[in-house]
Amino acid sequence: MKIGLFFGSFNPIHVGHLIIANHIAEYSDLDEVWLVVTPHSPFKKKKSLLEDHHRFQLVLRATEDYPKIKPSNIEFGLEQPNYTINTLVHLVEKYPDHEFNLIMGLDNLISFKKWKNYETILEHHELYVYPRVSQISDKPELFTHEKVHFIEAPIVEISSTFIRKAIKERKEIQPLIPHKAWTYLDEMNFYK
Image (tube, rainbow, N blue to C red):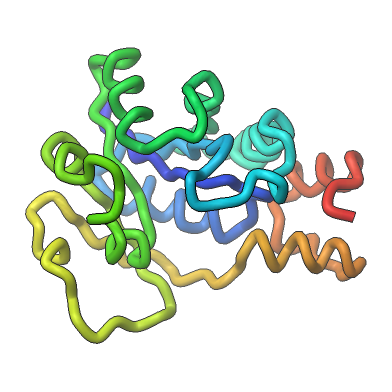
């Protein structure tokens, strides 16, 4: 089975995440897309994150109705802060019959050479890249790499940061969050 790994803090998950994940699941050669809830990114401050199990619960609820999109808490048991290469090694050992690939935005491809062991990742895994609004003038060499695939997914400019701020300001943002995840957020009074 060919799996696409879509990493994120999902703090909270929103319809933009689902639109991209669903589009890639339906319009690429991937069999499933796993939304990997990241406990702590080496590039983000942990204090701004909801607890891991709450963010996983949001992703679980948001993906219930999408058979090709699965939530994953695989990184919760790994040493923190974690790096993508460690997660990939762990997944390959745990699921030897699956082929794992990365899903990322164009901005991540541009900075991909800064990732820990990026050469090893490219040697063993493919990258599925979706567009972002920002345009770039010079295309890095990885744009033509044989393991990099560009997916013409819809461009969705919604951010979890915007959603957290809007909730705190008591704005109505229900349409931006999958209904089952919104219900959980609302019940738990998160971000208020």
